[in-house]
Length: 415
Image (cartoon, rainbow, N blue to C red; front, top):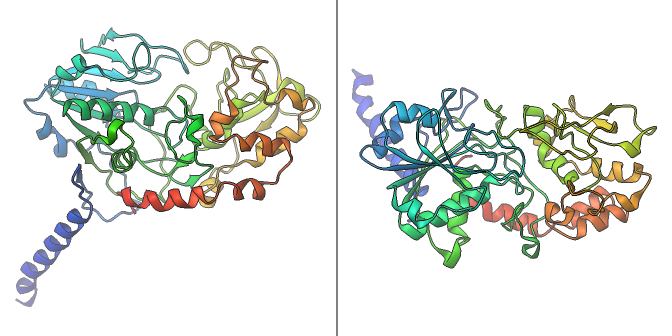
């Protein structure tokens, strides 16, 4: 009898706590569907997998979708799944690598008709980077469901901003199906906006420590859309997730991030795209190895990049044996636990490289990127050349990094 009398009281308290939680996490421009589960080590449930939460929002509406091969519901393409469920998908928008992920790094992608569903695919990595007014007039709601890897130079956050801009201009709602960030820590220099480019468009560090849903809230909150416009957001949160959790991606997020090891090493190794050192593009182990032909005799490990159609057609040092570091067995857990990218490898390989004038020289190969734009600062390259220590380099990232961490807390949806 005592237990029965307590049940209504417990239910009332539980309801009041949930209402309070929702109010605390609600803003004028964002409607968030929070997880009702206590975060734990049990199975993470992505936003896309929570179909009961968002299918009612799509009924009777013309739907546009920004998706790629990572956009899955229980290991099946979300487009194929929703098409089977008779959701009226009018347009599919494809980011870098395309909707089905067939294009290689940086390759322009053309519009086409999807052979599996007959739905028009509009490329946002070709002639245009943002949906046109005509594109937006054809839909009532836009879905964004793409797995990000948490790095400033990974282009999907740029695509997110462009989609938000198009939605804000046309008054259309953006439904974000959130996914975990496999690199959930915050580190690196803040981007100098004078170095803004396709691989860096926001004043954030190399690893921003946010999910796509959280980053969208930051774009709105910090006024990063033109004229500080606001995009109407609705976010389906990830269940059973916190930023401290590790997360193994079920699908490769892009052709050259083909293993969990490469995903976790990417924030540290992508900086080498601004050097003469290969990161393994043109092999089946990209972003897990580092090397150059000029390091022969210094390092015993070697690999040979070759042309891989659809993955890396003209890699740096093509058909040449490269000598350097094999990081396939490196304990990437140390990166997450430390909350730091690894810049020791950059320091080490620059010191070991025999022709230092070539190390950052972009005129040597068109495959080399701009180290200043990748790092987000002109200081980093000069610090490496000057032989600065890791500690000295890291000190130069302050106070910007600490200010960013504080600003970020306003937009977090997960503990």
